[in-house]
Length: 595
Image (cartoon, rainbow, N blue to C red):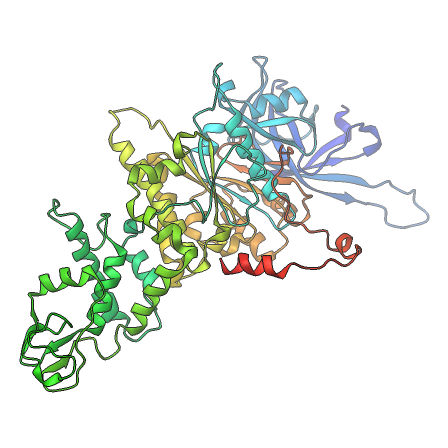
């Protein structure tokens, strides 16, 4: 290239401006996002590398008819990223530490394919390279460091229609297909997708599918916060008293079913029987006592001298200690003698303190949609079987991907369901790590991918989101040490807990049209990208800004198509509207609705 056609006209510590005096002499095309090299003075093997993030037209024509017209020139605004050294043959790239070149310079040019390949594979072994995209400016597949991508949390964000679901599917499909060496069968990847809309079953035909009909969650593993969130109403003025009773009764039931354990408390992850807890709460709510002896409980059929037709014949009652009383109440719902004379007094909670509480618990136990949480299988399932269903070992059938379809989970327990599964898998990783020898690494690293994460880990202090936020925030802060990492996917990143998002080290930022989301993502991105982030609202479907520790240079990329594709959520309204009127089978819909 003619050095007279390129002028460095402005230099700062992180950027420079290059004027192309006569664009007609340049055959190639500079694009936004293209990589450009500028040589060091008197050094033909070492170059400063930058990204073209903007350009402007410089027109010096003053409009005077008496002077010759001057054609406009172009000025490229280049963000400096590092240096490339080609002395040894293969290009070696280093981030930062660039010496600022001074004009004049000869050899300013776009990077060649060989140089680009050399940059993106610098200090990355063949076994570490993970491909799922290509540069938008050139058809060159670029790798990320697979280890750094998956062992550090990542986020995929983009508005509806930006290609977010296809990107998720492509990344996961590539991950489960990779093999180190020649062997038959599955690789050792373990990926759990929390699928809120049922999109991914089509993209992963060999995945293990869990939903409200075949999922088994041990309610007895719910912690104290989750139990209270599930059963208590924050707006009830009796909430404090209800909490106290719930804590005591569940603790006593755990003691009953785990007699060989010394220290048992409300939060202990030990089995208890929710039906017995309900029986006890009902009895505590309706009990009556002998007005002359407060340790005598007036259970019908167990009162001395009881005569159904003559209330005055009651002389005594069932005399029990407090501990024996609770154990008795676990057995069944009891009938107590009503308060109709001086011999019988109301129990402590006869004022209605527990009425709504007991009713809420009863409704939940009778709700068929909560069978996955309160059914017999959930009561009896072991911790081992619980974990196996999430990491691909359900019924001895192995699968790399487990999809948890949350579509059939009632919204009132969605946060608790996500919280419990997340905690179980974190605890599995934590205790697995404790069994390892010094220096030994986990054998089953797990990726938890949360689709539409803003729905269950929002930036909100409401109690109904507390459980899931605490569980996922803990994984965000501590999970990497125990082989549990996060993939956060959202169309509204500004609504996600900042604690969770700020722990992500890699970002695939697709088109974002909401200014609030754009600004939020720009603040969190780990690289100083200048005007490159301004492309977020104009990216085409499938294009993304790929940034983070796993990629050598922040890049504008085109995500490769996945195969098979996830279920599209786009409905062709206009096409369907033009078809002939179709009758609706309301009976089938209502049957599904009721169940």
